[in-house]
Image 1 (tube, one colour):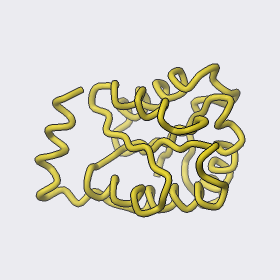
Image 2 (image 1 turned 90 degrees about the vertical axis):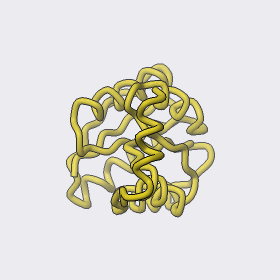
Image 3 (image 1 turned 135 degrees about the vertical axis):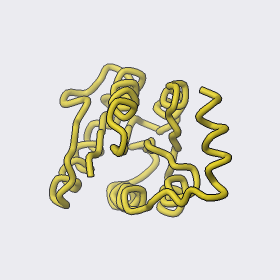
Image 4 (image 1 turned 90 degrees about the horizontal axis):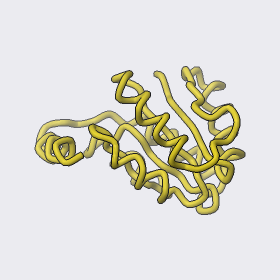
Length: 142
């Protein structure tokens, strides 16, 4: 699976930890901020645009609190994203909402929790079915 990641300066350390874990587990990782982006808008837009160009890829944006990256991501047409700080929400946003990106706050979640969140997000599959009506509504909004 191809995973696109990025961060601002607040999220850089956590992004690097996540990136190393993903590479160790055999994922193809595309890092949109090899050096920290000046702010979360730049790094999040780079991830969202890449995801829109590469269907089947999933994304992870990291900033200080996760909220800024989330606000940015959902302004991109066709992007369904979720700000998460627990494993279950990460799994369910993929399974029920077909989220293609999660945002994490490096000042909110610790290292182990962040790695567990990413694992849950990436192992979940979109269920479709009754959830597709909602996903279609979301995709029409932005």
